[in-house]
Length: 275
Image (cartoon, rainbow, N blue to C red; front, side):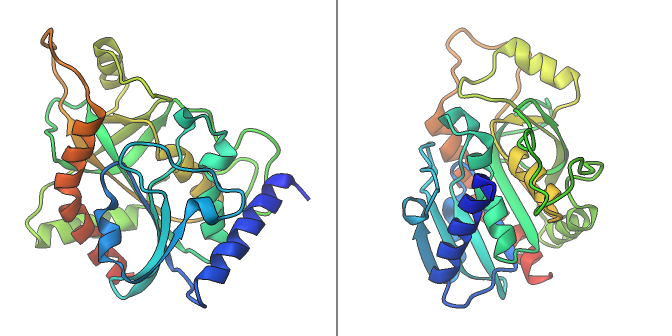
């Protein structure tokens, strides 16, 4: 058996043994500073990543490193309180391992979130952006021998983010009188933040927001046939000209994401309740 499949199976069996018979319907990936949603999960079962066979540890700022299972919006969910990143030195099969574990556990939808820098001049700190499409500058997680057990060699990516879920989010936001952006998310390797020239380039090629995560998980979810909804919290604003003393700061990113987390949590909760 492919050692990657052995790792996925072992991790899924362990997580299943900790769930006490719960069958998660929805998987959730919480990005930097967005762990608040986990506090809304009722009757939580907390499974630290370090206890799961074959799992790496999450070392990024604002990522606690737990699976949390329980009830949200009246549905059973399995949330990642922190994700894994390519910049942490992990290969893509480990970055995306949790998504395939979720697939084996029966997850039928995946909700992903991240903190992202605004590239679009109209975006402001604290804005919520529905991800309608993406531009991937990370290594593709499907490179290598295909895992036929999970999906086809050449998966379609015409609609990586589910149109029906996007429409649902827009209706819910309208009911809540919340403004949502809708744009294209670009992911690079990190961990260095982008230069002003890179920001200009990303804007030129069609990006609205930029980060260092999410897309590998989305590609693997779509490979597995799981519909995806994605949302970015804008934590930096684009500029035409940067002051000489301007700096991007990781702690500031987490604080900005935390301030917007309640609005994102409300939208996710109502979307999940409607599934």
